[in-house]
Length: 133
Image (cartoon, one colour):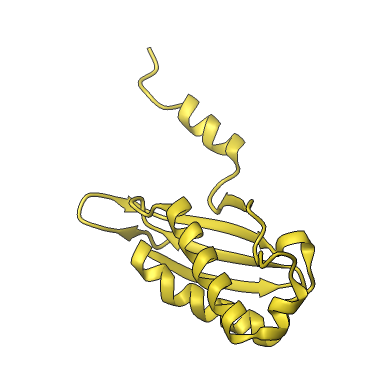
């Protein structure tokens, strides 16, 4: 396993992000998905985030990314959602017409940590640390 590092830490932090279109409107096609991905790759470096995998359905996207311990994930997600919403509606009028009240993304999101050993294995590892008396 190859770990990332900075001046004071070693880490490997993967996240799975799911973003849903407001009211599950079916507006994501290949063109929109590619543009959303480009915007993600443009905004992400400002937050020490690196895209690993991207996929979409008509009403949501799945994103796998790596982050640093100092990455402000909620600020990044909000910045990405704001920028992508604004740019998609500006560049693709037909998307704007499919939305309700100008909202592109749902207010909520799903963010999951990924990778590494299952929680039970980590718990057992931690329980078995220390000197046995």
